[in-house]
Length: 297
Image 1 (cartoon, rainbow, N blue to C red):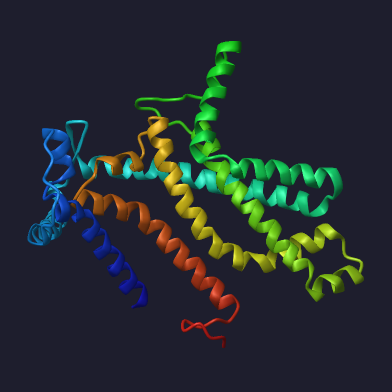
Image 2 (image 1 turned 135 degrees about the horizontal axis):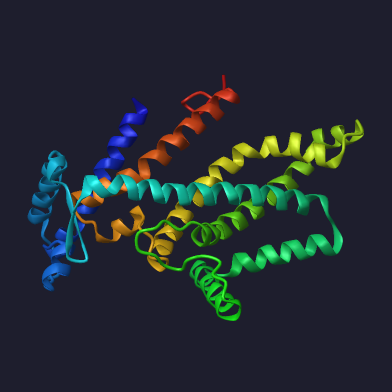
């Protein structure tokens, strides 16, 4: 029941957001693009209520769902499933790669010292300081320069109908990997101060075994709650990627959506991840004996 209420509130919030332009401009953004006319800035609560009603009405008529992209109208149900699948594949490939890279580099940082440790931390700090858009454009420029010098094209920069993965996944992996590395290293340092680490060392267990088997298992719960920030960060980067790489993903459709199409596309993006996070969170709470009210059994 609690899950249903949360979904209902989120869905209602998306509906209100989708009609928000009408509250201040009394117009639809798609009409602005198609007709080249814009509404007058003001406050239109009655028109806002009417727009919300029309969004509800259109959501109940799936046979009439359509989306206008660059002046061309598409049947929404025919394009959205393919677009969502492509975007989720790029997202999940990037997330999996970021987790693997973060795990390996975090272990390396935790087990090394001296020059190697400082060098790895410096590289991570440097990547963290770079803006997302700089990394994306930088990767594109490197590919173009390499192609001009060698004649070998590592990956497509833009395409029309084919799906590309190498460069988008590479760009989307960097920022979450850096965030995960910084977070994991910080959490592992906190774990090193705990008594069970000293006990494990006293028993003669290796540093690698203690780190992987004991320390990592204890930081997973804290890492999971920080992963929600990574999720939002990756979604915003995915939107930029799909524009810069001319990808035919669902985030590109979001740019052209308004009204009920905005609600549908946002729901398709949000719902799978919301259900996944909810399922994992409930499983983790049960594993540590936490009840729904936040108390422990």
